[in-house]
Length: 336
Image (cartoon, rainbow, N blue to C red; front, side, top):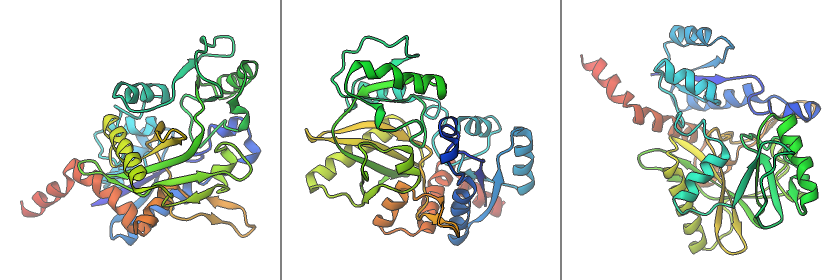
């Protein structure tokens, strides 16, 4: 069975490049190579495939390499392409990937799972009436990699709101999600699988001299990571139960990361599901000490669970293989 590992230039930082082009680095190839090498270590036949602007060229490469399943699809465009051509791939599908943060929160809230109250603003002159509890938090409705996030995104009074909404709507070209800022512990829960998902140890994220997880903190590995996070047995069970319910109601597939705030009231509030979560199990620096690839939160959780990178990436791939029934198809080919 042949696995094609997608990679695409600037896939993790293309949004932040609109705001601070001098503060971003491109780790797309290094990240994909991590997954490729992990799959090779796990015994899979794998190849790297660079995503082409012309999808027909990508399709030609897939056919030439005789790829059976694709790993590391990382955008709606890529998922749509794979669905259109009927190519099996690892990860969530077009029922979940196109949904923005607000739509995902609506589904979660409809299922009576906790998430902060919110409104959506089209621009700084079109902000809905704010009947939310301050402080507020403002973020891009389709954000990725903490793009556009710094401490000014925490809003303590209405007068500061239009400026941040403008930053997101004008410079990032997205609507702004305005939600209640829940004070508490920032946590994230990685989950692997589809039929029988495995919930990984909880990751807690603290900040060095910051109040939220900014782009610089996340992409330059400046956070203080605790994994497994220090919760009581009862709290841990509650958090994992809520995370797994969210994973299921959103119909996530093969792997995802559920970002939450564990509030001072003891409730884990859903913030976002990351369907293209970072999976790297270590960070790497170049000869000058500059970071080449940052450490994925799910990578921390996998190691705490006792997995090396081959077991971790391989288990995600196996979920996709099982979901498509590719093993049975291979067996039929061999016996026919």
